Length: 356
Image (cartoon, rainbow, N blue to C red):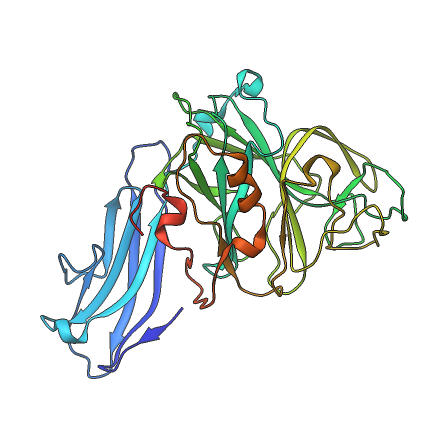
């Protein structure tokens, strides 16, 4: 994303190279590509203007958030702020060998709910916000999947089939298994944020950039447990789309999958959930609502376009039924109207303790 100001300062691109394994290497890099019309000397800051440097390359960086500012030498009046970029902690394979999630939490509908999303950050990457309404023990696993429920079913017919969203290859399901491998329990009332990369992000295809209450975390292992060569889970910005949080395991068939487990939460973006009173076409991006989450799902009736939406999170350690009822009523969510291609969710959405 290229931006300029009245002084002729232009930031063409900010390249982020995430810290690599093992955890603690602190080998991230940020490269700022910028110029000024009159070819003055520029100086660069990654700490919001506290300090400036002549070099546009910053190395040996730890995971964290960095606020980018470029200005002509010693000229604060012509400073151009790019915004905040993030270097997440790496998810390292050596942490994920022989992960056994069987000792973790058994989740039920409403234990973990969608509480926000931005479907177009960093060129199509999505940010997902989950509100945790039960303690999450080490070893807990859950699934996020781009699927529709009971595709092809006629009016009044129950099939319990899951299918890929929006494609004739209905058995090609995109699904990620996420395992929490931290040493301590994530308490009820916490918020987990993570990103779902786009095809062209250059960051790989699986969920990444995890935070717990706004703090970067490498305590999650992510694996592809779907049935497609392109395992991207993502929210479409032009057409309706459905996302589900589940727990259990898939059994794949040629044209569909079945789930042994539970459906925890769901979002239908850009359309109304279909019910048992409606048939479900194939292909489709509009899902039938699952009977387990009929009262614990979100119907995001916004136009399918670049959108950031969230439910106001209070960090309540003992959330009430009223919280659930409000969090799953999309009409009570806030919507960020101005979408710039960066993270448009306010900082307090991923960090419930942050001041508004």
